[in-house]
Image (cartoon, rainbow, N blue to C red; front, side):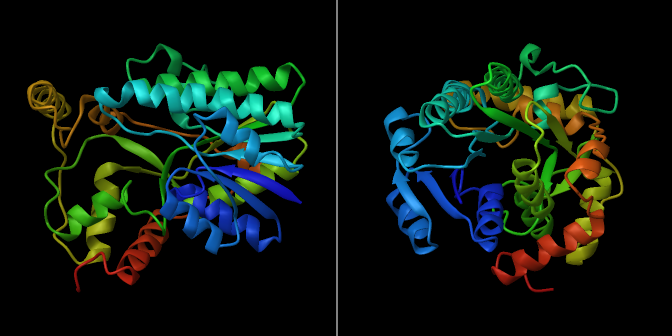
Amino acid sequence: MRVMLTGATGFLGRHLLSRLQETGIEVAAIVRSADAAAEMSGLGVVVTKGSIGEPDALREALSVPTDCVFHVAADTRQWRRHEDQQSRTNIDGTRNVIEAAQAAGVRRLVHTSSVSAYGQQEETLTESSPRLGQQSWINYERTKAIAEELVLEADARGRIEAVVLNPAHILGPGDTHNWASMFLLIDQDKLPGVPPGSGAFADVREIAKAQLAAWRLDAHGQSYLLGGAQASFLELVQTIARELGRKVPEKTLPAGFLRGYARVLDAISRVTGREPSITPQAVSFTCHHLRVDSSKAMRELGYQLTPLDVLVHDTCEWLREQGMLRAQ
């Protein structure tokens, strides 16, 4: 068996790569940098140098018969100056992946989207919730929704069998810059404040298992929400602080203050050209109350929800092993 993986060097991509190789599946990957190519080659990955923005590179990566494409690569940045590149990666890149897979005769595509494709809704998300991301002012939400639609349209046309996964906030070992930045700020007593929103915190290891299960399940045209432990950001921060033995905050910052502060920083960035520490887009996410129903994925993919304290503990242990945390 052979599969092609985009985003193999990312947080989630690495977990999926390990899971695939553990089951004896040959993995091909498309990577951009020479260092990443050398690292992936050392792991036994069949490497093609390039990106999903390069159709020729995708064709080369799929020049050998391939059973499935796992499309994980995405641009998740939350600053307006990255939006053009983000659109090229998330929309055009996904279109390139679909077209290359179809041309190569690949039977199955497992597309990792995001809960962001649904937009910020007040009700608990289920797979039948309207996908409002295309109407969002946040470019990440909009591009993920458009990309997901491209995938489902390709499935509906019958030229490839596609499954869509929509993870929520992803935590776990192996993270170095996503939610890990919050762990590091708390460890260094530098967290400026706690936002008032809440989220569903998914275990990266369980998501990788679900990706593999989605390939094996004959459920093309289906979408699966991959939520996790439901908690406020205050609960998350408090859990991390207790695990690290740091000062535990007792309250959140007002949403209005955070939005105003982010707008000020955004205005300054228009003059300096430097990315602000907090953007209006990021504030919107962390002031929102995200609720996700994962019952369909639990029932059909064997997806599991990891308790928040276990997920935080495992993440901290990995960060300690990497020497990224202070000694207790």
